[in-house]
Image (cartoon, rainbow, N blue to C red):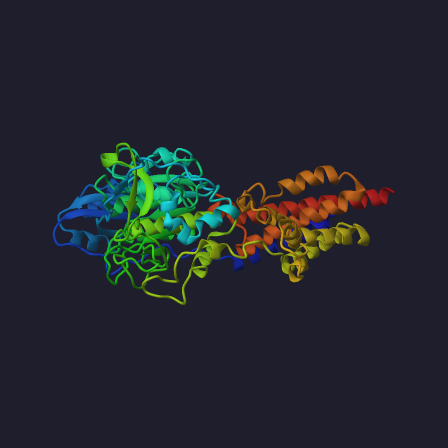
Length: 585
């Protein structure tokens, strides 16, 4: 038995080594200060991004170098070590901190804005429409139908379980957001202590992403089952500091947001914002950002960054909107509106003037295009896809004929991005499950026949009857379930969001089944096969990145490998029990 455990230990260590060798390694977090970051003449506010983990003593030490008192941007930004202070000579202060060991970046504060004027729409004499959705103003939402949201609602969980952070002027839960899950927000804007929207832009953006849908009120949203995390980084005047935005991005990632919507931008780059985005994307967060409303060549930042999905705007005709910025950095185009045409704006429910009341307003801008893509990302994530798969599907599914400076990869097409989403079996996973089961059974001393049953069961559990996908059989959820591994069953039945639930991607279910079915000899081999098959799938998912448990971020692969190990140990216990029973009889 000692030899069995030695062999198992070698197997597990080999798997860990293979995972470490093949898994994507985190990129270097230091981002050089880009040449485009402007340094104004004279004094002003300086943003200092200290190394992560810096404390008050480090903050004071850095402040003494430039002879100024630095303070944390916000109490929530202390963990990310983001500080701000007034200096008399910005250029000299930045140069003094350029190579300081405690400083990642130092740059002049930027003011970022770009908020469209609303056009309110009266609701008088409107009656609810019939069918799905029954929102009475849905017929005016050409933008949702243009991207295929109405078809996606019928075949997906509609964003359920996905948290989308809206970094904007705040979010107020107006009448047509009452049925949407909105988390307690936070404000990084001095003088505006909570995340209520006093301007209207942020609530409008949140509505596009997740407006309560099919409630007989108002309008619909792209991913109505998604959860909104409001983070106020723009003031009631529609502008915000680059320090607030960077701190908000850090906070969104820390709070478990899976998608970040940035309907904001500037022609100038900000190193602290780029660093925050880099760290968020390393944790698996999808960051979507506006291309800008200049109408000229030159995509605004952070939309132009390679880490973000830069979004240009389309009008109702499907042509690029005249105000939309274009050029390198545009990844997708989505409905943003063109109010030169009747009902040509993007219609959502938002707050009234000064944040009072509720109104249905048409906005236009790349700010409006961006949440269509963020909502689409939430829909795709809710099907169980990984962040990398979602990004690839958004770009590959776009309607276009190669990259174009005005529309990037093409127009957002959620239906095309969902095409062929049904999971597929894996011959390699099946082989991996069978091999591990054979090793476990034989090394534990179980009979050849018993071990063979367990190996066949492990192969089917891990890889499914994958050959069924090669046959001309009618499509259906049950056929899909038979052709894929057990862990893929939620996706086969349209519950892909459950496929990323950490307890599903664990040894708990195989362990419970082994506890009961493993007590009986006729079902013991099946229990071993199930446990080892699940373990093989978990190990394969950790190595390839194809499995991504909710909310675990970079700890996801460790969780998968640990539970794969537990599954193999369960299989060894069952094989050992079979050997003892056989010897006793």
